[in-house]
Image 1 (cartoon, rainbow, N blue to C red):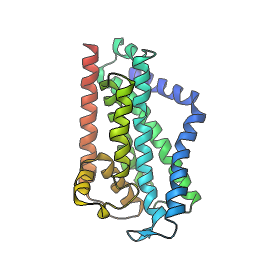
Image 2 (image 1 turned 60 degrees about the vertical axis):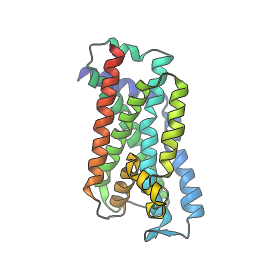
Image 3 (image 1 turned 120 degrees about the horizontal axis):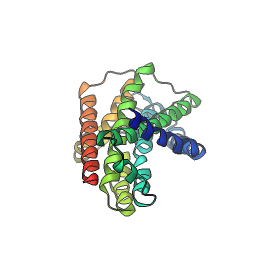
Length: 244
């Protein structure tokens, strides 16, 4: 537990030292999306029986959580290739899974911060969750899932260019075909099938259902949990490979 806390505490110190920029990152993109799409384009538009802004905000929670949680990959990438600080973890007596868990907790903290920011933005626009505090369950699972993916990718790529390529070809496209900004019912069949494979889709659908007070299929939770476990165990394996 001391090793886990030490790794997590380092992340919190980094967060504290960059608190101004971090808060701006929490609010800037969601505000722009809410103004441009929700308030601008979709002001008089209804989607699935609700105003477009109300439909979009849950997707924005999932999207922002993904971006902030996955962003730890860049920080790990820097600590591997520039400062070489990550090597200190590998040389320490901390177990492989502790190294991964410590970084995941840091990513989850950033993910929950983005959730709070979008909720505040929603209140400013007069949109509030219809399910209360229970919405934190899929939000938390979403953050853990993409933090695990962030650790995995950061330990897999060989350089900064590979990291940028993964973000450009995987993370960014995922943002637009996962039901975050529009209903999946309008997608062509091939993209609808593809969206079912994307982990962010299940986060968006689960968060939106709870946000709107609607029932949600349990299999969405199971798929998110399966992705989380997969990313976590692969990340642990990458740490072990780095040590050996």
